Image (cartoon, rainbow over all chains, first blue to last red; front, side, top):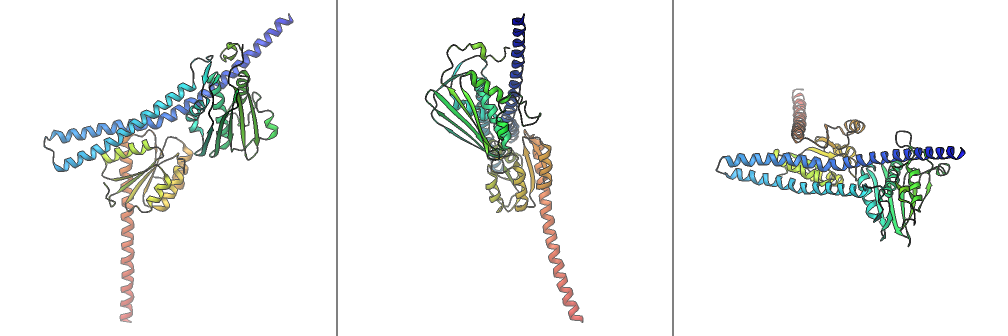
Length: 277
Length: 160
């Protein structure tokens, strides 16, 4: 009887935890969607304008050709049209390259199979996450990165990307319009260390103790649900890694991640599948 | 194309693809001289020596300086040039700030519509030309007034 009740309580707890994880994933997805929409907006605007410009240019050329005799004045006009079309043609290539890059970053970020283990180049993963999130950073925020040569890390790539995204979002919110986001990554032999530092408002020592607890937030209800860092710690635990934080009010905050190069032996794959309660 | 007495439009956006697209379109569809910059600081330096700057189009989000601060500074450097803000952020707060602080003429959103953009640019150039003409007429009136005052003084002295 007691055993059955215990099993029910445990199942309920697992269910509630899975629900929290799903909520955090939805929040991550929201940021991603906004990032992609923003990143695509500029090249899309350029392409739409260029398509219209090219059509107008063709109409003008057609009008000149319709006369059958090209006057010297019209020749000057043709040169002007060619100059304009050349400018927009170059821009088309830039816009297409930008969109390709966004799709590549997105592909790397959102691996389709959550339970897929990959050997991942974490510097590339950090860069992709930064590309998708840069619109969240204030206009006066500069990004500095210092990446040593990193070995490939065996991990659940999407989950690790989710950690990077959470830390960068927190840094963006802490800094507002001005500041410096610094990302260091280097090898420690059998593991890698990644530090994400911001020059934001910092966290008081009393809040630091609660930081990784589910539901803890200083941002107010509209910004986050306070799940981000709890999920980060859970993901790091599951990779047999760790996440620590140091902070000084008015100076900034640094999160340090350590990830072993290989996943713990015998770790059941299902334990990493966040969609299953 | 390089005749600096022509009515001039300045385009400023840190995204090269945006300035080049706008430049291509305006070159094709308008008679104006177009100058483009990806750096608002360089644009401000260049604006100081532009003789016929009629209109400035600036992006909102730029790493060196935001569009509102840039246009505010531009207002000081070239007060008669019409100022347009082009933005990917439909943000009422910034629009109000831009209108109040930078004396903004128009607020355009990305992605823009070429035909609408052309219309706004043409009206903006016309507005700036009218301001310019008005300033010249006011100056001419002031000199005429000064000259007349001089004559009057001479006349009064001659008769008294």
